[in-house]
Image (cartoon, rainbow, N blue to C red):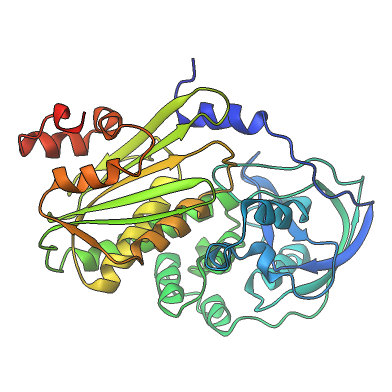
Length: 387
């Protein structure tokens, strides 16, 4: 029996094998720009660049924000990612003043792709799939690594040299300046943001959640000051073998995330969920980083519209789904929130509308929920209403 989302996804990714690119011990090409910082053996981690064995503009290979608007297929995204070769070298997270880490910072702050050369201790092998970070191709330890000249993004450069600015404030300022989330996260990960004494390398998986959390916290402070919406709304979006329904409620901020994985490995129908009330959440979410990515995406739109609402998000992942990282949640929910709002007089009619698009009966989500179930009870709406 599978207990919990993490165990399910480990079993799912272990069952998948997708051939990645084959390269020799020496290669030259272009980094999109892209880096990866591992978490194993923290605080002495494996860090390094990700390089495509092709020259020129490879930005699209590590720019998740572009994939859905440009209608990239799951197959195209996987091909981009498994063509990135990960070089790695063990380094202490506080050792920022060495040439290797400085090269990683050059890459992360760059405004465009950078020509790169690498020599590995052995031929890179394997591939990595994860629900937390985007996939990547084969990896190996680096013997030598060189890059061409890098031109830094002006906003990232300004944040790098402001070493009196708190990292959370730097993340917020960069977002306000229109810097893509993926670029902000990479800068955070290589220790290029924050006050001087607190800068360090941050594992990629942790840095993604840290940036989502910092942005969500700042936006929520603004959203709490806005008027509550005056009716129930539904916003929807589907891509990459997923369907998302965002139910916005005329209440003060509260939030529940529910995701169903339907018949991906066999006949399984599994729902995982987590929530927070208006008073906030304590501890790390039991469903992982997607909880914070979704929350940020919803709050980003509410802040933009200068509105406050409660939010219930239902996600279904279907056969053919491949874990691509939490960008999948963030960018799909962003796209859902950019759709015209469909308005309903109450929660029951809003949920009945969503139920027509779900493969699972909506009552399955209600039974799994905490927040949604309580909200329906308070409105004296029973499960039998959704039979």
